[in-house]
Length: 130
Image 1: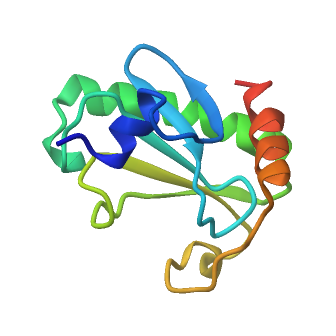
Image 2: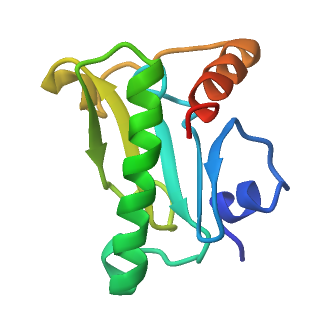
């Protein structure tokens, strides 16, 4: 059975897409830690990040780097934090989170809320610089 991320990639579930290429897809986390919190996923449905083939994991990080630069250019923050948690969805993915202090990437903290219009505006702002 396809993961929720595969369904998002195929357009079966809507998302706020930030970037895409032949191997990867980036979209806003709908339960974000901060404005611009983006998920980078492999189009190849592999559960565990460290089970990705070496070439794919390297390419995924280069793709994530490009996405992070677009986020940094458009969302006010000191850095883009990166996290690979991998417990919530069985599909390899990277969290890119705009941060100003370590606490900003604490996944136990309360999440921020945005309207559909705000999410779309954030995605549009980031994607224009990818």
